[in-house]
Image (cartoon, rainbow, N blue to C red; front, top):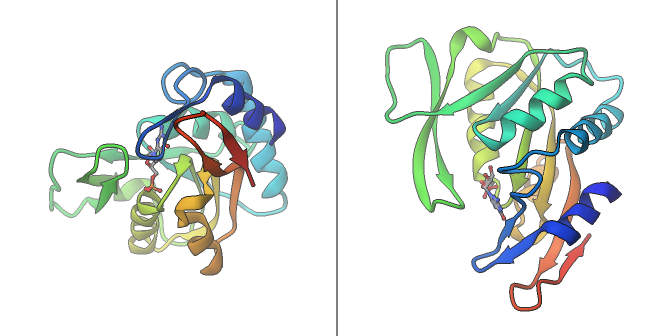
Length: 192
Ligand code: 5GP
C-alpha cells in the first residue's frame, strides 16, 4: 500500500536492534484516516471470504482492527489481553508469547465466550517480525477450534522471516508494507 510506505519513509525511524519506530501514526499517535485506508485494503484482499470476527492483540492492534472491522460488516473485534499470570480457571484460552520489542515472554488470554468453535476469524496486527505474536494468536485459534481465514498485517519486516514461514504453511498473509531492509545508520528503508 503506497500511502503506508510513504508514511513509513517520511515519519518512520530505524532504531538499533531492527526496530522500526512508527509512533507518529501507528503505535502511539494514531492516524485514523490511514487506518481506514488500511481496512479498505484488507477488505479488498479478503473480499468474498466469510469473516465472523477479527482477532488482534493489545495494545497497538486494537485501533487498526477496529477501523478494519468497519470494512468487514462491523464484525466484532476481540483482542488478546496481556495478563499478569495465566489463570487456569477454564473460562479462558491462554498462551505465552515472546515479545520482540520487550525481549521477554508474557502470557496472553482470550475469554472462551468470545471465540466460538467453527467461527471464521481474520487476525490483524500492526507488525510481523519473527512471527511469535502471530504464533500465539494461532495457538489460541487452534484451541478455540476457529478457522483462520487470513492474516492482515500493517508492516511486515520481511527480512525477519516470520511472514514467509507462515505463507509456506499455507496462511494467506496480507501485509500492506513489507520492509526488505532497513539501515539504522543512514535510515534507509527498502520495501519488497
Ligand atoms: P514478532 O512476534 O512477529 O517477532 O513481532 C511482532 C510484534 O512485536 C508486534 O506485535 C509488535 O508489537 C512488535 N514489533 C516487532 N517488530 C517491531 C518493530 O520494528 N517496531 C515496533 N514498533 N514493534 C515491533
